[in-house]
Amino acid sequence: MLAESFQTNSEAAMCERIHHAFEEHQDAVLINAGAWTHYSYGIRDALAILTCPVVEVHMSNIHAREPFRHRSVFADIVKGQICGFGVQSYVLALRAAASEIVQV
Image 1 (tube, rainbow, N blue to C red):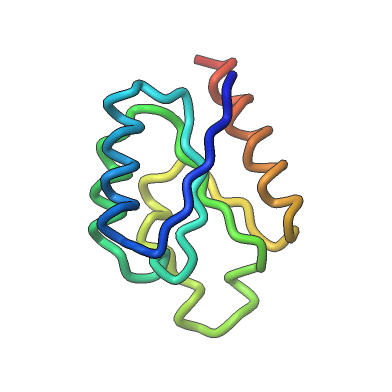
Image 2 (image 1 turned 90 degrees about the horizontal axis):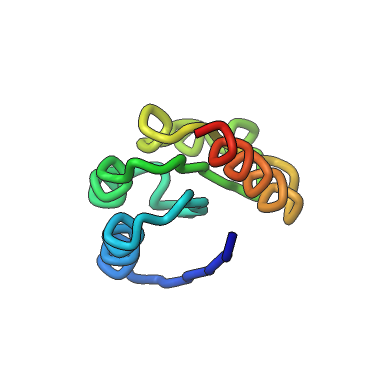
């Protein structure tokens, strides 16, 4: 399994990268969408086309922060959420995604 990373400050570029993941038949997608998590229906719609496991990742515990951060517009379409473990959140999310790929 090859892992690729992508970072952008452009919501449109993020949507395009998610579309490429669909076209490339990626095995899984990990996403830390930062503040977009709470309001980006464009990214949510892009993620919704994916047929692979999607894991939402946050370094901080979004549920222990300001009330507006408690809601993720992605929550009902992702396989799961990993949050609150700092950098380790990415390792845990990768493990969860790999586990889902093996189960398929």
